[in-house]
Image 1 (cartoon, rainbow, N blue to C red):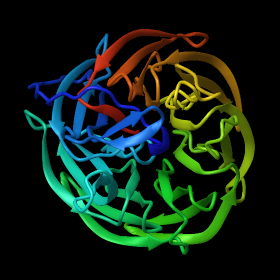
Image 2 (cartoon, rainbow, N blue to C red; image 1 turned 90 degrees about the vertical axis):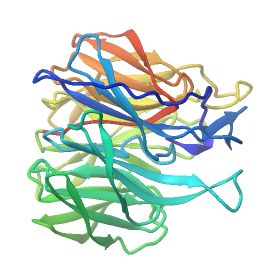
Image 3 (tube, helix red, strand yellow; image 1 turned 90 degrees about the horizontal axis):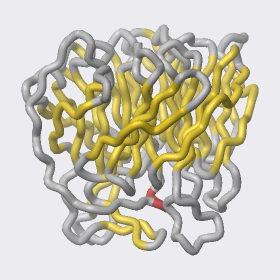
Image 4 (cartoon, helix red, strand yellow; image 1 turned 180 degrees about the vertical axis):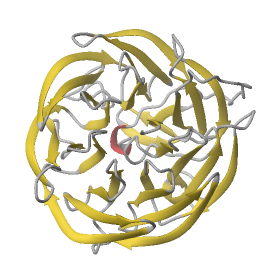
Length: 386
């Protein structure tokens, strides 16, 4: 969700679809920006923007299908992890990092809203709106479903939210010590005792300690890569992977691997992927990690590093070693990526197409099999972490 190269075409009014789902369902939630358009490589605020929307998808169905779509504020600015789903799929949290500036509607200004969406309601609905620090970006919910952390890019803090059923309450902030650190992504460890925060502004990774509802900055940081962005810890708890946005100059950008099995977390590997690494997601069993790289697909067509597709790459995970096993091309200006529980289906967002590509994976090859249209440019995508 990099505003420097955003591209969004077409406007639509969100049409709500009533839905119900059974035990086999797996929910994926896509947040969609209705405000932004890229005009020949330049991010532009639409003169008459559509509402931002949130689309609920059954990823357990074959093929995946849309269950409903509602209005809720969101933003393409920040990593495509501005959505989080509770482990029991009862609620979703959606962050809005930017909004149209009321003083100058041709520009954006930092937002501070988190929408709480009741996924069990029929139809689903926004049941609360919370205020956090400025520029809420990446969100993570612990496996117990009792705590959420939000990276606030424009304030240099991480907001703490407590969760009790469907009630979400602001419970303080963790100051990272540098207002220009631009925290973008945050990820809980499976045991809920640690969280990692990517700092886009000063190129560090913060380590937070978590004890119940008490979250503290350990003051320890890691360094690796330039402009770290999306991050996730493996369901196995032994490694974390984060992507680097780089300097927006057309160079190959990387992902980094963090070893969590030693005396202290440390960066142990870097792997090249493509231009502007955007989204990433571990498979449910931790055997694979999928990564999207925009590959210049949001640049002006005359740019020397322009490409007309996003790259989706899948790496197998063996301890701290990652090996690329498959890749595919999807729509332009790609965003988030998620896995089905069985590891055979992936969804990948494309802002340009107002759509999510459906891909199949058999352990060796990755193929596009379909497409899901949404209202607005899809820019945030998650499933529940177990």
